[in-house]
Length: 247
Image 1 (tube, helix red, strand yellow):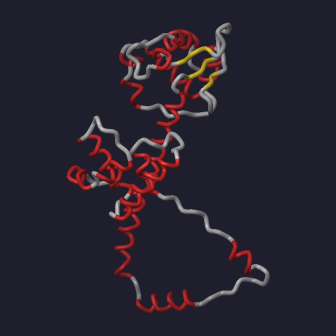
Image 2 (cartoon, rainbow, N blue to C red):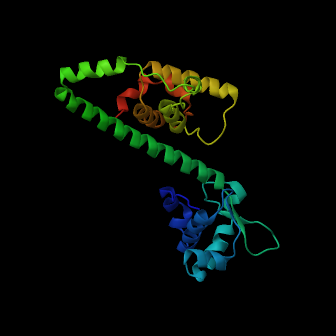
């Protein structure tokens, strides 16, 4: 099991007001939780698995169980964890586990898009650098090879024709959904139809994943109190261009 530790955790009340033992304990619970956000372990087991001294874990747990009126989340009155069973002193549910999973998925997708853009730029640079090294005779030879048809072995023709190539990832779609923070759930048919229309419009404008992320950031800066949706982004696409930097 693993979990990302988000920088925002160091700006919340666990870090700013403490005690620090609560922040350390919460980080360990995020790592040890199962896919449902359950930490079905005793404090001693958490200490043994993480090598964090037991006194730190025992100091942190009551703080995590207590209400926090200054927490970003109002669930369970700001508690970070709740007991699985009221008559048992151990075993906890992480209250905002779904939100942490959504943030993790969004961050992993953003990192994928960032890496994609780095690779894309590198490939373009290499393509430009290789233009002057192309031999015309090599190009003619390549055309000849491409025109040559190789028949499949007997009995395999039908198999080859029936095989469908894997569907490529739609990076523009993924960028739009990630930029708008909509990758944490399943949309309705009406929502998906609207999102598809917005992505189609952006594709017609020759938008790239990097531009989508940059202009979405511009949108949020210019209209911080207006919801960012794929439709809204497409409608105000040109209005966001002024603040777009390098993707």
